[in-house]
Image (cartoon, rainbow, N blue to C red; front, side, top):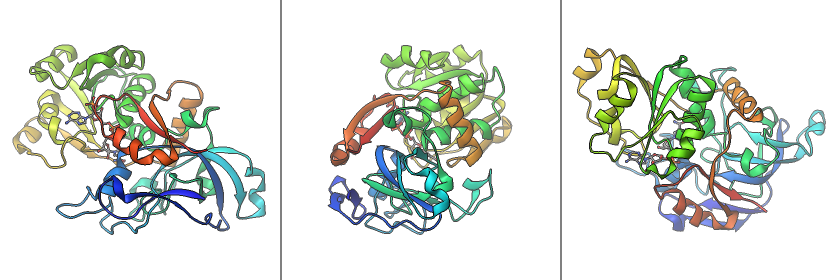
Length: 345
Ligand SMILES: NC(=O)c1ccc[n+]([C@@H]2O[C@H](COP(=O)([O-])OP(=O)(O)OC[C@H]3O[C@@H](n4cnc5c(N)ncnc54)[C@H](OP(=O)(O)O)[C@@H]3O)[C@@H](O)[C@H]2O)c1
């Protein structure tokens, strides 16, 4: 089978298209013919080694074993199974819950042995992938390209919204709102949790589309009066900030949060280290939450919301599998709206 593998930490030259034997299916696994795989920042930082603090590293301290096939947002068709009990699954179109762990149902993402597909095990930049049968779920939409985009960023966003327990009419400020996680945060906070959403973006060209997805206000983080802009539209109080940006907007988040406000951080695309004046934190009774991926029950709720068209896929651009280098380069460009997807013939 054809795969794109990462040979080591470094630039795009570390992505190589090679032929490999199809993976062998163990008893509780199924073999999936990959039809579409969306790109996430995780596999780009994994290749770049950008998770390390002064040294190249994957997202886990234990490092990445190369060569590794990246890709964690996968939709495809089950073509063979490891045991006869699973034969009824052959031919089913599925999406893949994106990690394996020993964590109990509902707390899977809190387990130390979490193995993320595309990082700790081979992923979806490939014609075939193996995965545990119980972590394959019925495809939520008829189209592979549209179905593949939810597993990582949608799950992460759903978990963030549940973690901070958004209440109806809460004012929720969403950073990185044009991106993979941010666009789902906008939709989920607004359409599922009925919050009053302020979306923060670089380019206001996308304002109308963000409003159609549930944002009540859209502001540019490039404004020289950003804190005042947010205070004005929020009536002076933001209940919750959902953050994938990190340092670039950390001070802004603390300034606009109300007393007792909550800041939930799942990414740091705008800087991994920051300055924190502890007085702001305690004088405003602010709670900070760290967040990684989500749980199986959250994934099930997410897929139901997709099936009923409450949450919709937004795709910026598609590439073929062999264009993985171009696709990853494109992913890093600012100003996109939504996911970048690899289509596998
Ligand atoms: N914890 C987890 O489980 C988890 C899961 C998925 C992703 N993540 C992390 O979340 C982050 C975002 O991932 P993504 O897939 O959503 O990425 P993405 O699709 O590339 O979106 C990034 C967003 O951040 C904005 N942005 C980038 N630099 C910025 C800056 N300096 N100031 C303000 N906004 C900035 C972009 O806005 P413009 O394009 O409008 O400028 C865009 O909306 C990454 O750090 C990723 O590793 C974490």
